[in-house]
Image (cartoon, rainbow, N blue to C red; front, top):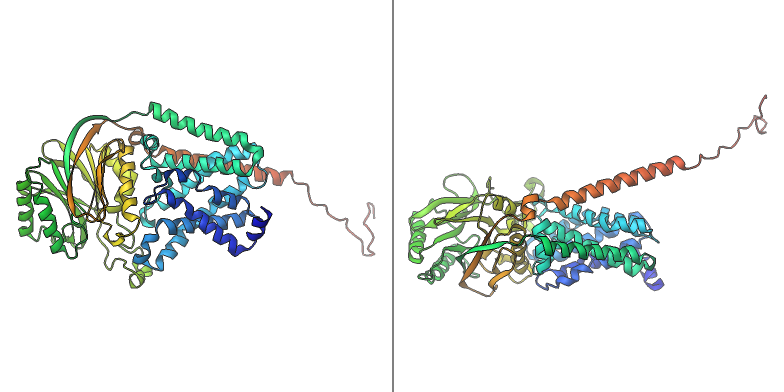
Length: 521
């Protein structure tokens, strides 16, 4: 330990260790998907910040670790944004600086049981504050939230139906804090074990009492994934070819991926007729996604458009939350230079104004989202409250085909399904395409990034309202309250210490002859 402490005495080595420690949690996400790793992945980072010589240094360790986390989570952006990826990681990594200071404040030295008990709720709350801030769409959205690493764990999905992905993040951090205390502070094993037992009890209670979706129907939905094909014309031809294979398959809806149509259908009635012919041939409506300049209003939109046997049905959803740099450049007058060093958007896409629930056939109601909108739990919760039967995400990760991004994106749909109690279809151009049932369980098999195919899924339908849909982001609100109470307590304690500090001793005044002044003189 002394050798390690001597090695970490170098600021540069300590910073490098913090970057590596912050990057460790990425192994819990797809593609590695070591979900169990999430429950100990933060321990090295916590121990490093706890051992910092000062709170200021711990804050810097938090920043460096945050940089490592963001770089590891978004490393697949490097071919797209190049050097700007490092800039974004450094800016967003700074959000963990305050968390690092909190870790040091609560766990440094030989912490009391009171400080450890506080750490078990304050540090998870601080982590949620970071996730809340970086979840803003302008900062990249809620990609890589710690709780989303549990997308394939059934008990975790049950918890998501109660408190959303936020609750999972909170509990994972609490477990990491407890493990770090068990490793570093032997005298504090009792509160640390109590924290682990409390987390296990909460998980068990949710497992036992959280309502389960009642499956009350089934629909057949087909996903068409053309694969990597250059040019909108060639892509459309391949999609038509694949869709023709669905004739006579008795499907209720056919879903194409993001940017599956590169022409404005309002300006190309010939293409609209071809799609209508496909709908008649297959006996199903087709949900396409148009990425083109519109003829009826200025600008380029990404729009989910429903096509029936008689042509365009009028059901249309324009993407609301755009990908920073990918679909627009924030503060383009200042950051427009990003287009010269990477593949940032040369022209900003236009935004839609509201979510849309589409009516398919006589009774099926679907709620489309486009690309990384599926990362936002508030969007699926809103659509569920509007009465959707099936959530649909249309996506394309062709730019990041040989990275972890396709698997990471597909896994998010499992969380959204579990949170809302509604099945979700994740349809892509180039993989990974996947479908999940109303409890977040996988339906059928994935269409991987090497597939150019169509697949029919028997999608179970469920209704009712999960606690998360009904109560919303109550976990976040509770975390903010915990932080406010703790901050008020810290402020009050600091004020009391200042008031109780002894008055500084003032030396006696002296006369001109340098003798102490005495009374009566």
